[in-house]
Structure formats: structure tokens, C-alpha cells
Amino acid sequence: PTAEDDPDVEVRSEDIKMDTFRASGPGGQNVQKVASAVRLTHIPSGIVVTCQNERSQHQNREYAIRILKARLLARQAEERAKQVASLRGERKAAEWGSQIRSYVLHPYKSVKDHRTNLQSTNPEAVLAGDIDQFIEAYLMSKVGQ
Image (cartoon, rainbow, N blue to C red; front, side, top):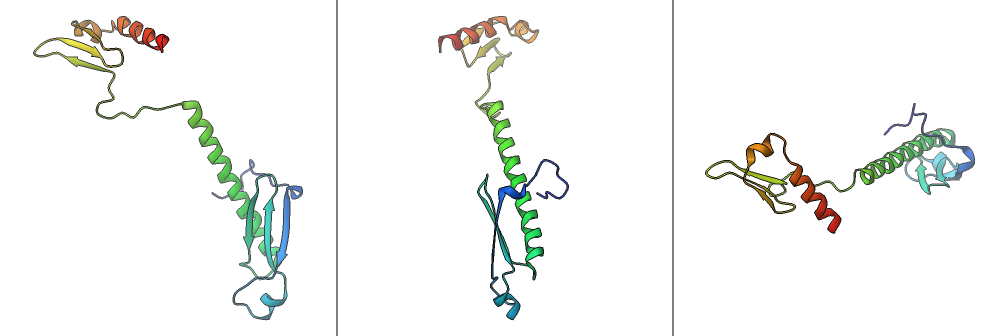
């Protein structure tokens, strides 16, 4: 995620610990002598970002701050998703064998509630909306648990 224009992600300078060090890799004398690499640690979250891609410390710091904001945004999105999932509760999969009721209209007539094992021989009434007996049986089974 990009945190360029997101107002929700705010990184205060007091919350960041910045370390500078010499970068490694190709680049000659500048890389070996000048401390151009940057390591930012976001103290409240513990996220650490290291950047040594650019030639100057200032550019590396700006780039590292953008990466840090993006990681904070991703963490916020993850926490929001966990919160929404906990509010939704357990979701039952809609797959074969997980149905609540079975309706048999031919050769005999029957409606069976698989949660309570209640059976009715009048599927026309149930299909017309008369499901009070099934609701009561389900609520009674939940009270008994």
C-alpha cells in the first residue's frame, strides 16, 4: 500500500529513532566512507525500515519514511480486518451437508430441520412461511446448551 496521500498515517518525528551507517555494495569511495544508509525504527510499533538505495542520506531517509508509512498503513488495515472478522463471528461455509432444512415433496411430503431434528409433514405451510415451530425448536435447543 502507498501512504503518499493517506491522512490516517501520521508518523511523528518523536516516534522515530534514526540510525545512520555506511552502505554496502557497489558505489566506490562514497559508499565506503559516507554514512548514507538509514535505519528507521518506529518506537510504538517496533517496525524497522532500512534503506541504502540512494546516494545521499536525505534521499534514503525520505524513502525509508515512505516505506514506514506504507507498513504502518498495512498494519492498520490488518488490524481493521481482524476487528471486522471478530465482529462477524464464526461463519459457516455454504457447502454440501451444511444445510439447515431438507424439503422432500415427492414421493412423500416432509420437512426436516437438521439442527433440531424436528420433522413436519406439511411442506406447503413451511414454504408459505409458517416456520414458527422450527424457530421455537431452535431457540429451545440453544437455551439448553
